[in-house]
Length: 399
Image 1 (cartoon, rainbow, N blue to C red):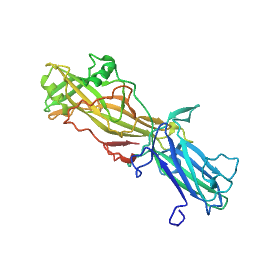
Image 2: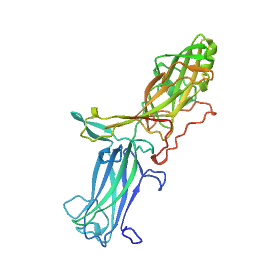
Image 3: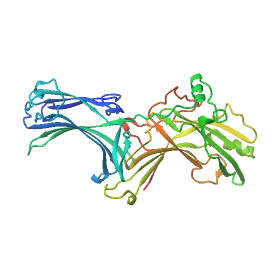
Image 4: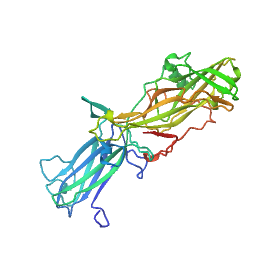
């Protein structure tokens, strides 16, 4: 605007956002569609109009703390008749000098992958999802900018808007027995009847003291549904088996509220000038538990005096950031079994008992949708993360 009641240039963007007040959002394979309108009555000095799309990793406030992994330029209009232009139905936009009311339709494709120099040869990376969290030390940001360039000694004008980008990642289909269970609304078959549908992790021995005097020990085996890639908004099915000779200890450890299994997010990045070798910079790590499993006694596997069986699932929020990696930024996940939380019991082990890497995707696998099996009394853990922002929860920063 130039002080008048109406703007002399405006950019309208059409996107998959929930409302006009939301951040413009584009999914993989979508174009950035919109319209640029310009009143050229007093714009004699305009030389060119271009649109640019940038994707950046931001790790600080300095110029060296910004890395551009996506940089597209889309010409809209130029005074030179030989330069490329966007076709326009406006008469004043099809000459070497703009005049009157000019309108250009925009449709800018976003690539699925970008090439980034890494060592001896460039490497292809999928574009990551927008990542903006208030207390995170790094972010992934995308911007759309329209620049109106003038001649020498005249300042340029620009219209800029950030936008959200959502990649399309999909898990492989689950095992046939699990698909049949989803279709028929049957209980999920366990590792014994569907060995191809589960990954059973290496058993760990749980050791602790009951009531500060009595030693307790049990073998704990955790199984996760395969493939180890899960769509946000669904669940991670889990099965836990406890074995031991002390039935009282087994009863305490197998209480559903005692088992602590969580989904842990790991954000890794570094901030340094590009001229410094990655071996000589300090990587920073941020760990956050973003979801916890709920448990209930198994309805398909029978317990005995020496064995307890539990079924569980980790509910994934719909706005959970997917797994991604590009340049010096990555988001990874793992399912972590922590020390048991039992009244009157203290664990000898410190730290996680085991951890298994998993991936988070944005789209459903082909086939039937996963079902939620946890009892209705269990409420899902929600992450308030609107407009690509979220408050921290259980975050640990390691420099």
